[in-house]
Length: 248
Image (tube, rainbow, N blue to C red; front, side, top):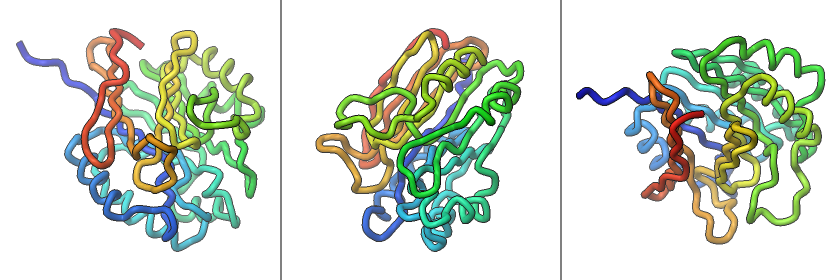
């Protein structure tokens, strides 16, 4: 019996391209592993750079361009918004508010950063656009940098999305299946009223918490049914299944 095809989505975050934190050799391993996995979609949830400077964005793009997949969704983080970096982001990667559709999956990416401020904010002016952008997609994925719910092992909470409650309500009313976040460099998965909130760690930087190695997420969606698996892929090698459920 022929095995059902799985759609693969790679979710990485917080690569922090800069001399002080970025690990080029680890980035090479990450790119090779992602291309080996052959994902259809790649989502990068911010902090692409460390200081929002033009050379950092240009270097990051050279790495990201080598990732082989049909759809790429890239949103900025708080580090990318520093030093007017949000304008550089637009020059290098395009819009900071993206909608991508692929085989029944709709991904809406938003910029939750504010210039030179660490905490995140989506803003009420974007809520209607977000809801309309999802339409009647079979699978709805929301992507932003800042975390929507506090994450364990991250210390004192200071930078949660300031309008997190309203955004969570909006996503649930919109029927969002998966929300992808980064920011705290700690991978984690929450299930909130049936919506999966998936945080990615840092993929290839040394800005790691004690005992939490660099990693990224692999999400597999089973076509023809609603099963989902989420794997944590460790950048130095190895992986673990962190979620396996028959429906989303």
